[in-house]
Length: 556
Image (cartoon, rainbow, N blue to C red; front, top):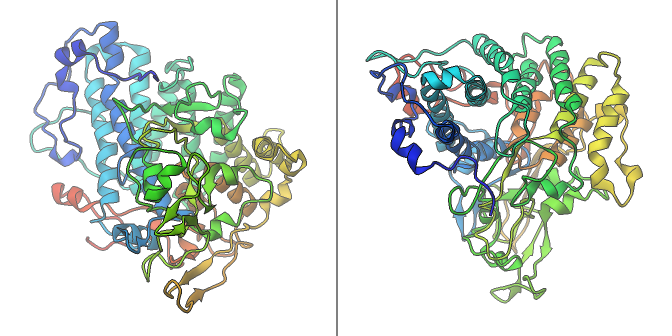
């Protein structure tokens, strides 16, 4: 059984029960008339256990229903959840796909509340004098808090920034200007990174995790502030990534799938991971979401399955011949049980088809779409619920550095071809049968995307006349489209895609990015970039009169 690093001991619960969260995740609803610090003397075991609410919040942030993994991917050009004819789903998932965002969608309330639960947990722990005086513990908690604020900033941009747990009665947080929030996250990480410790222990944030968050901050600066671009942030990103690379503590796993097993604690690629486990901390429901109920027999897993997820054929088409990540990630065609016998459904063999009908008109039929098999499913398991999360991987370090080198045209003695070398290094394990295909050039990475963007749906009925609606937008006009495709193939379904396609622009479009400016499946191109960030949830607005809704969403 895997080790869970944040299991709360009984003695800790008795000593500091005040640290537990009681559902208060909306900053506007916190009770602030409490002391600013506590005098309890922690034992070493208790001090380690102070991380418990921080960890639990992060699990919910990533894998909670409607959490960040769903929100960032279901609004992207890779996968979604349609109205499944004869099964269900649809409604708010369709809105996410079409970028019909509003403040009542559960996705936004969950992401807001879960991340602020993490902030509150950190602020509460940091109020303890013993934590304040322990250099490493204090630095690590502050780094976790910076991570939660990074998430909130990325998702909502105009957010309250508060670093204290105790406040006077009636206090309400005000929104911080985005520039000020960015500067605070940067300053906080720079102050604490070197004090977070260097030991590589799965499930524990260290110095290199803190630098990874900082690198992400720098990489996304120009996407977050498109009217204030500054190439120095790509330089800063490389400088920080080189600290991780030169440490020699991480390397690429021998096999792509090594990073998505139930237990990934032995992978040398994991810079920061979130441990999950059956009895104490389940979370990953991808097998349950994606597989048809009858398809459980392929692995003999015991959990529910309703076949919600679909992958867009336009995305599948960007894979290259011989890329093993395709079959490592996707399952298609006629299906067989764990003993190799055909799986039948109403007298017809279960068959996952690549082509789809529509997100909601009429929707998708039960057998439509390839299914996600990236995360390990073991016989007898509930599904993928116990699979650890690779939050930051070393492959990301290499591809982030490559992106910065390409955008800068070279830096600090390294060139665009060095960027291509880094990308080729990551690709190598996906082309073991033909290593020559793993090598790419800078010109290929700077070329357009292979993704055939455009609206593509069939409004006909199954067995009836097809009624295709197709527009052709292509991907040749995407800056660094070759690299964007590589990011898609490498990090599919890892809470990555929205953040990437916000960062890549369409040539000649005056800063319009792929996320807003392109159509895919049943989502159409938008006129502006207001949906780069999500609306602040209505519950937060109703609870705090000082909050103002993000531009483009009216007053809802």
